[in-house]
Length: 171
Ligand SMILES: Nc1ncnc2c1ncn2[C@@H]1O[C@H](COP(=O)(O)OP(=O)(O)OP(=O)(O)O)[C@@H](O)[C@H]1O
Ligand SMILES: [Mg+2]
Image 1 (spheres, rainbow, N blue to C red):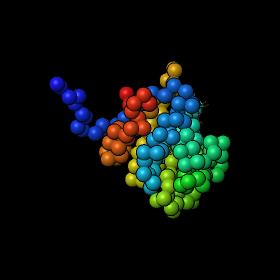
Image 2: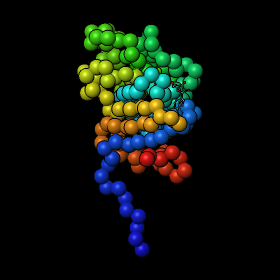
Image 3: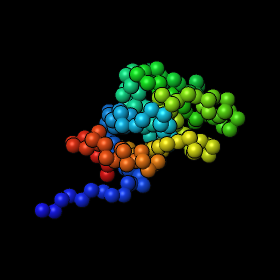
Image 4: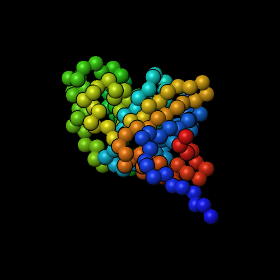
């Protein structure tokens, strides 16, 4: 009998198609449960691509009310106190490296929680801080997400039971 072959090489990136906002939140929640505290995630994609919707689902995994997750456009960084702290930054309105430093993003203690950053690609200096990088794009009937980042985290996500058995799996 031929056994099904396991994938040996971890993926360079993972892809997923998400049809609705509810599905986006479900995906984020399942991902949040697989990732380890201390993980920093960059969320990239045009206006309305679903970045904040992703954060709402992610936060729900740590018992943070979805409604308390709002785009931190003026506060710049929100901290949601749940079962673990979830920090949420939106750099859309930040124009310089100095301004970015003044937000305090480099001083956050995220070891016991998570940091999610919208528009991180505006600042090269953030590249070293990101463990994962999600690229969202708007398609006719939903959103495509490409997940890039550290190999070991991609492997964990790829093999996690949270993404198997009838649940949404990678493309
Ligand atoms: N499949 C989908 N996944 C996520 N959002 C979707 C989807 N389909 C439609 N939407 C809608 O797209 C919008 C996404 O808004 P959201 O605030 O999450 O985007 P964003 O990427 O954070 O934008 P911004 O850059 O302005 O902060 C919402 O109005 C949501 O209802
Ligand atoms: Mg947003």
